Image (cartoon, rainbow, N blue to C red; front, side, top):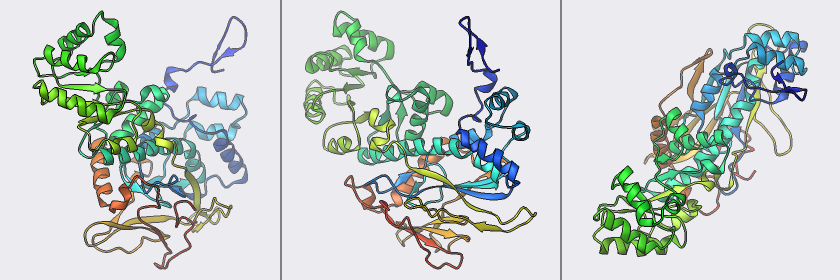
Amino acid sequence: MLGIVSERGGCVPVTLARMQNSTALLTDHYELTMVRAALRSGAAFRPSVFELFPRRLPTGRRYGVVAGVGRALEAIEAFTFDQATIDWLLQHDVVDEPLANWLAGYRFSGSIWGYPEGEVYFPGSPLMIVEGSFAEAVILETVLLSVYNYDSAVASAASRMTAMARDRPCIEMGSRRTNEHSAVAAARAAYVAGFAATSNLQAGLRYGVPTRGTAAHSFTLLHATESQAFEAQIGALGEDTTLLVDTYDIETAVRTGVELTKGKLGAIRLDSGDLAELAGDVRQLLDSLGATSTRILVTSDLDEWQIAALRGAPVDGFGVGTSLVTGSGAPTCGFVYKLVARADSDEPGAPLVPVAKKSVNKTSIGGRKFALRRLDARGKAEAEVIGIGAPPNGDTNDRPLLVELVRDGEIVGAEALEVGQRRHARSRAELPLSALKMSKGEAAIPTLMLDEHGVAAENPYARSEA
């Protein structure tokens, strides 16, 4: 049994060190019971194609951002079952002996294509195509959706924020507003969408996201005077540090910081009040004191709308927390993972046939998908073109969107996080100007569905609210 017996009786679950890196149980109970039943019916190993996609964008959003691709590849690589895990599954009747025997040797051996990290997406975009047997592909459903839905929600919000900030840096600082694991994922996703840094050290260690931070109000309150606190911080971190100046009186704090650094103070941070008005007043004060190079950073429950409202203020950077790590009102992207094709029999080499749901408001489109971004002569996006069963024809400047991520079980799509960040900047720059409006609206470009002959097909994702 996976656990230890307590003095009060019963079993206390424990996490064994050898299990900590496995992603196999980051899944739903029914993923395994489906395979258990499919083994009994004989259909478990039929060649199948699954698709991870959005039916719509969050209400009012004009585009979304793909993030979590690298984390998903890590999760696939780590999706294995050790004996202790299998024993627990057997004891709780999640699996039977035939399934347990198969899981003991499980490693995904199929192939995956998908939109790369940082790419923008629209309703119906085939963000991930998973090809393999039904059994080995279906059990990845929950962990892939967990990664993609959260990471892409954060990246989509982050993209709107960095678009509004323009060339002024944004720092992710929402770790204390979400759980400890999603905090790391959020920092990574925000970086993909253009954030310059994070306060989360684990994100720095694991993913190489630059980290930033200086002091909180408690540090000032610890000392007998604000001057003593600032002097200690400057002594430890240097004159280029950022001083938090709204613990007591802002004007007094700014004057103290400038005096202690002889006008060479790196930055001040405002964390309360009317940020636009305060930033204007503080800028005038800094300039009057000769601290013309001292930057002004603002925090305090910012979102993309507040950042947009501060465009005209003398603000040099933004720190964003709660709104970012909760998707700024859209904490999930609503991605789904559906079987879209399967072999029509158990015979070797049997052809794949499209399959689809017809449920009201939960329609899926059968068939393996291909995708390209249709661009006009200026390189601006005009449409998301999805080919069903065959790649759609494009012009010389149209670009394919799907890249190879996994080939016959081997990860081939891993890349540095900075590559995704640069890709996002290019992808967002392709969009029409309407994409960057903060008002609610339709998707910035339409999604077009074409059959294998290039003829327009029925498209249930034609409108973002469909």
